[in-house]
Length: 376
Image (cartoon, rainbow, N blue to C red; front, side):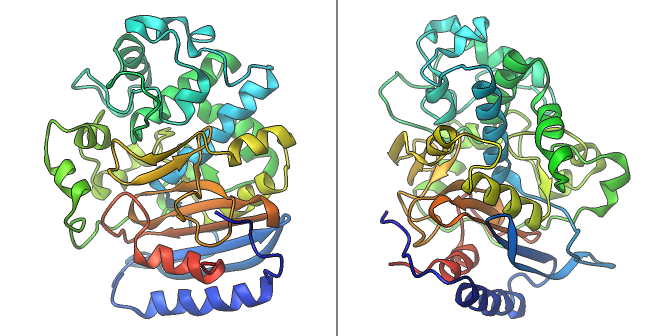
């Protein structure tokens, strides 16, 4: 991707996004639910929008938090990179240096960079029957199993496993779970409405997530997902089985710390955090460069589509963040997306409650991103 145009104008972009957001809200899809969108630049609000309902009897407000599904992974990766940098642990170090059990089954040469960029070959868990909330059991099973495929430099998206792997690394190097690390280092000091596990007094504040009306469009991904033994199906359903929105709306899972897919946040909190990352706040220049630099790019073994990843973030090699050039962040199932544009000091976030089908951004998300950063 080319560098962002130097004449990017916040006012013009905000006007385009405002119109695109209004079209989205007027459209038949979603017919229910609500959404929020925010753009922050250099730590200041450029745009903050919301519309629709958080629940049938409750309008969406600026403080409505919503499940962001896999957009959680970018926040989890930031915690891991911060914890590693604070202890001077380089990304080329083997994972087993901080997690000795991980070396089992021939995995002693897997580095932290491999793990964070989905090259470790651990996209799917071999042990069946583990609960999505059983961190210790899942981490131990992943440490004990072999790779899903021979080490060849290719990558496969760890839709569920990534959060357990990164959480365990944070626990090993910092002595506390990733959720606690996030609260102590980032959420509390920055007063961010973004949680890995909602507190009891906020459980009922979250927007109700609404399942997609239609299945994913026909294609290689849909065929792979429909095949029970495929790597795609295994990666997107285990541990925990299919996680329907109705299950994710329950108090038990709203309060659970699920770094892969369970963070609940406002659009403003997400955009503000990414604007801080874009501007280097709380991270060194070298670490921000690590976030923005692709370590792998090409066909994804799980998503059956080209993707690119740095150390924990999806990068913009294939245009997931529109025409903004170098950027890093993470999308989430159903349409959520959050990313940073370092050259502009920008954080962008879109959080809907009514989901679109598929794991990667759909038409409405792409339209909003393109309004902010038109293709070159």
